[in-house]
Image (cartoon, rainbow over all chains, first blue to last red):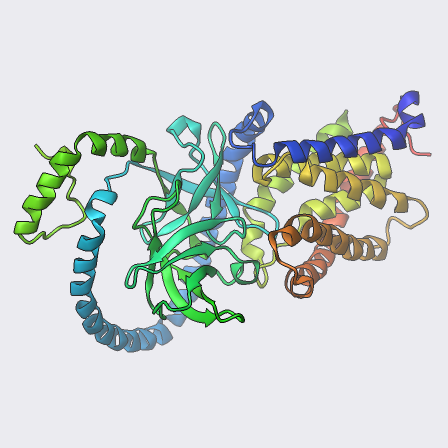
Length: 313
Length: 174
C-alpha cells in the first residue's frame, strides 16, 4: 500500500499508456468476445433482457393509453391516407410490371436464395450519443457469426460486428462507421449508403457517390447491390427522400429513409451464412440452373423469387 | 471490500439501466451519460485514486459491450476520474453546485475528446455542428441528471463510510 501511495502518479500514467496501446491493438480485431467479456455478458445479458422487456411493456401500455386519446384524430388522418394510398396504388401497379421485368433482368431469383434466419430480440442500445449499435440476445450459442446480416421484414438493419456466447453486437446502417454498397432498383445506379452523424438522430442515412448523370429521384427504392462481401444483393435498404447535387457538380448524394423504423426495433432476423453453401451449390449446378431458367423463360414466371434451380427435382 | 462490492453493483446496474431504460427518456435523441456522472461523483466524494478506479472499470464495461476496441472508454474514464478527483478537497459535499458545475465542464471535455479522437478522423470536420447538436444538449441533460445521481451516490457513500469508520481504509485519504 505504501508503494502504491508513493508511486501513484507513475502507476496511473503507466496504466493510461497501456490502455491507449491496448485500444490501438484491439481496434478492428474485436470480433469474438474474450473470456472476460463472455463471463460479464453471461451475467449482464439476461438482466438487460429483463429490463428492456419491462420497459418495452410499460412503453407499450403508455403508448396504447395515449393512442386511445388520439384515435379520433388518427381516424381522420387514416381516411386521408387511404385516399392517398389508393392513388399511389394505381401508380404502383404501373411500376409492378416494370419491376417484374427488371427483377427478371437482374436475375434476382438466383441471387435471393432461401436464407436460414435466426430470430432475436433487441436487448440493449449503445449508451453513448455518437454511434448507433445495439445488442441482441442471440450469440454463438445460436450460430450467429460476425458479418452476418441483420434484418427486419421491411429491410436491412445492419450487420453483426461482434459475437459473445449469448449475445451479439449489431452495427446499424445509421452508424457512421457503416457503409453498404447499394443500388437504385429502378434505374440501377450504384452508390454507397453511409451512416451520417447529422442524420442519425432523425433515423436517416446518406447514399453517396451517385453519378451526376443518374436519373435517381425521390421515392426510388434502394437495395443492396451485391458488390459487397457482407450484404447479399437485392435486400431493401430504404427509399430516396431527397436528391442533392454536390457542390462540385460531379456527383450527387441522396438522403435515404430506411425501410426499417430504427426508433422501434424490438425483434430482428439474423441471416445465417447460407450464402457460402449456396455459392458452391450454384457452381456445381450452374448448368442445371441455366436449363431451368431457360425453361422458365418460355412460360411466364409467376413467382420470380422462389425459383431456386438447384433444389428442383 | 464492502466498498468494492458496492461500487461494482452500482456500475453493473448503471450499465444495464443506461443501455435499456435510459434510451426511452432520450430528449431530441440525446441520452444522458450516467456512467460519466457516476465517475465524476465518486471522484468528487472520494478523490483521485478511487475516481480513476471507478472510471477505469466503468469504461472497461462499456468497451466490452459497445466499444470497437478494448481500452478506449477505459482510458477516457481513467483520466476523467483522476482529474475530477483533484477537486475532492476543499468543497462542501452537501453542496450540489460543485458536482453540477464539474459535470457541465467535464461532459464538454469528455465528449469533445471523443469527437477529436474518433469522429474527426472519419472526415467530419464540422465541430460546431456537433457542439450544438450533441455536446451542448448532453452537457445540459447530464447536469440535470447529476442532481439525482449525486444525491444517491452521496447516501451510498455515507452509508459505506459509516460502516468503514473503524476499519482500515482501502485507500487512505490524506
